[in-house]
Length: 167
Image 1 (cartoon, rainbow, N blue to C red):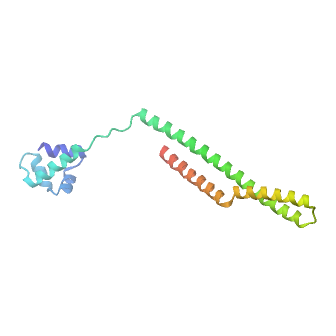
Image 2 (image 1 turned 90 degrees about the vertical axis):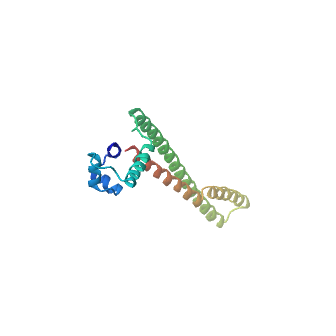
Image 3 (image 1 turned 180 degrees about the horizontal axis):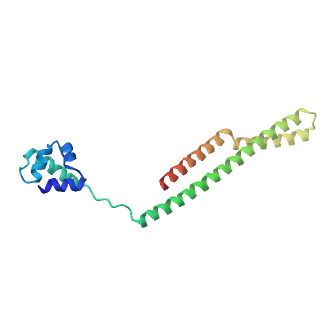
């Protein structure tokens, strides 16, 4: 029967495999193929349903070399962009950490100087200096640093995933 041959070709199955998948006996498949018997109606329905399902599946062609090259180029550009973003974020984090350290040092120094004997004018100057350092400290606080660090980790994860896709 042509239907059995078509299904076997489409799926690349042997008679044994087709028998296992359809619950039609191996001997029945062999006899039908050699035109010695007709399929029972229930077995014929199973095969027709299988064939109809197979025919409904769209054929997907493997990507052409041009499509592969375009994908590779896109992945390379995406990888470059993510690596640049990571580098920018790392530099921003280093800058933020440096400003945070400078601000805490400045505040500690201003506190030490204020505790010594200073004039009113020097005290006012130190207070303004301390306020400016406190503002920098708030701008570069630990939470913001942690958020930036998390962003860096996310970008690193994306970079790893892109590299996996390139392989």
